[in-house]
Length: 227
Image (cartoon, rainbow, N blue to C red; front, side, top):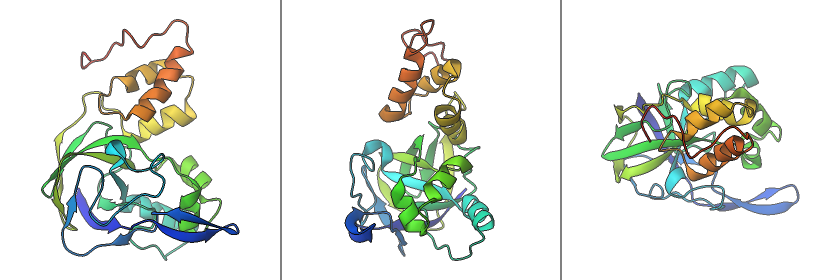
């Protein structure tokens, strides 16, 4: 597992459907080492802080394996690092192998996986395809966000070392599929709620699923971790 590129961008104004919007999705690679702090990388920023950024979404990660999938699927060869708005372009960190709650050492920093990425219209803007967010959603290759446990410098070439695997073993793809494609799965939602690292927003969504079942309760979850 390897960090191939660190990508950042400060918010900027761009035209969209006859108006001007502000977005930080146009990430570009940075040379050398960059300080990863609690809320983001130095030189990076988010325009919409309600939907992006914050403690549980400090860094967005997307894999080169997903790049290759979309190149084949879309018949394109014009991708550059940061194409999907990610801060970290990585190798060997697949959505169906990385778990929510996994903890990694990368460079001098320590990070924790908190949730999958949910696409918005700005991804379509970045890709030059209005329809792409729907394709991205249905492809179930969302990538994931990180929370920073220990700040430190990172740079292209750093190795990701998994220092702790979450005991629930729910992968990024498992959790994404569960919320968007298997909404009636109350037992699955209860299992997701056992993942301590899960971000508050996603936790709230799974709590709503459990609450709709009269026979289920979040007060007595049967978690293998004993949480």
